[in-house]
Length: 202
Length: 202
DNA sequence: CAAAAGTAAGTAAACGTTTGTTTACTTATG
DNA sequence: CATAAGTAAACAAACGTTTACTTACTTTTG
Image 1 (cartoon, protein in one colour):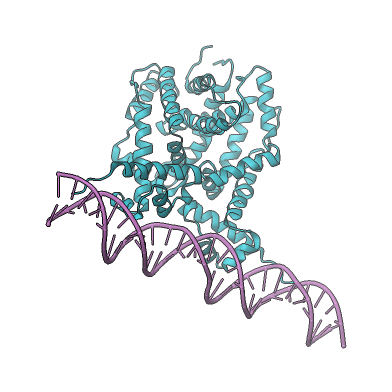
Image 2: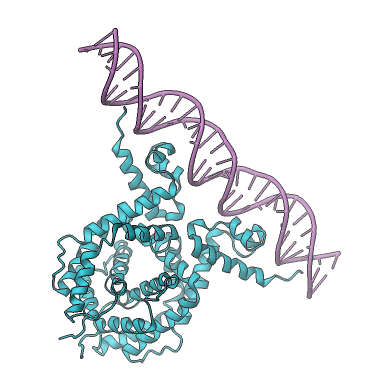
């Protein structure tokens, strides 16, 4: 049996993400992908049943999965509130900084009905990957350190600004001066954490 | 001369937005749009030079323009900080609540390179529509009431969570209990404003 | 321990559809 | 009846996917 060429498997993923990031999801075609990866269209269909399958696997495995893994690096449920949020922000920013194409597809997850639907299904199947963060928030709510918002609401309050800042970071990459420095990022993280606190001391 | 049928002009916009919201930008085709609007494909080309032109005009005029207009309703630059942010949040939420399809295309603005590029150009041409908000923030920075972040950073801190909450509102619309109530929304707005304050009193 | 057999990996070229857009024509009103 | 609005039908090009075939490697066999 002829062994499979793993370089080609990787090339499919890499170039698909590259096309999505540079030209948009709506301009990714199987024939263009095959041509740019120097393979036959058929080869893609050896790994993926169809285009939707490719997109979903790219999104869930290469983007969401890798992101979920990256942001929890070094995270512990009993961390101090500000320190915990800071750690996740640092991890997430470092992850996207090195993987701009993953960030581009991540953004499509909020727009595309196909990706959005698969994300919901992924969350159900995987039984909430972010359980540690869930517990972490619940702990600080019970300790009356932060406001008693639902977890979904905290996702918006604590992490939506970060995604916007990553976006801004990439936009300022081509300009002479970067707006999103690590100093700004740290201060933003503190601001976001400050907003969550029940009582604040300054 | 035969007069133009404005109903058909409106139908093109409405149905295009509907298809994008329900099936995604990547599944909008000129022929599908024509068929669903009960017109000839040619009719679309009387108003728009090509597909990109249609998408850009939909996005900039129907979505961004309408949004910019809606959120500044009743806004004044010398408003109290918390009150100003609250007003914008209320206006934005009311706008999207009534125009779910506009929100869907708005989300694509962060993903699609075509829409993203036209947004940048729009900002340059229109010379910052959000000048009142700009001035409002600058005023409160000078008064040492809020942290001296750049405006782009404040956009992320103050309004990114709102967009996520609107998204969550729509997701919970089909479920028995709505998570995003106006009470929660108000408290989130206060949290976001609290995070921006230089000194906090509780 | 080479050569033949077996087999999945991979290809080139094509399949029928659908795409964005246009041509040639008809319709309705000032 | 002039003229722009609007249509039905078609265009080439590109689409997702498949067919028929070749390649390269493992395993079996003499």
